[in-house]
Length: 226
Image (cartoon, rainbow, N blue to C red; front, side):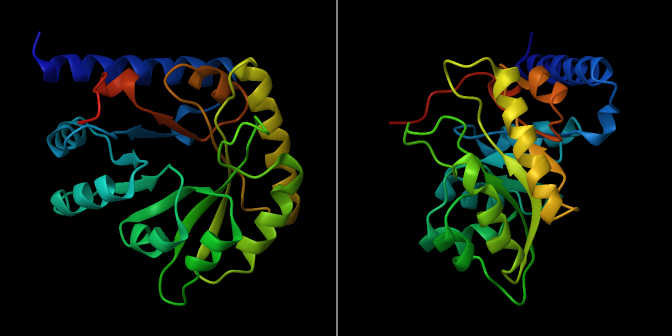
């Protein structure tokens, strides 16, 4: 089987999984955005996925994302930045990323302030506090959301998180859903939830995820150079 056929099969398998999980949750799968995470994979793979109907792509390293967005500028793609973002790189990332999933610090929020550009953003919530992972504490979600709401050029979509090790994904995503409900009270349009990766996206869908960040289940494994 050729690599292209394998890629198509993996993509179709994930799409079928999304449809099944959405049906189990009583949801319409068309309300769920599949973001294919292509970190460590070359630009030609993104072109192949585009040919298969994918339009949303996620990257977590600025230099790699910037290079790919330039190489693929002829395609109609929506780039999602899903990794930790440094304030000094924030404006550069916003030049190609329409959506940033990982806002968790005032310095980055302030760096993204703009009267000319609009960027869709998520607040990243740390569901594994004390681990050194990115994200704000659950108790601080509204504070960061308020900061985003008062910052020119930012459109708050909702909340994002990664399910921590040592806790069942469904339980973790239920906590994220609770954080989402608190944000919606102060920002009714911020109803989106970015959650779910290759190993746990069905559980995320059951807890209301609207944006899935799925990599290896579709792209296959690739080791970073060096």
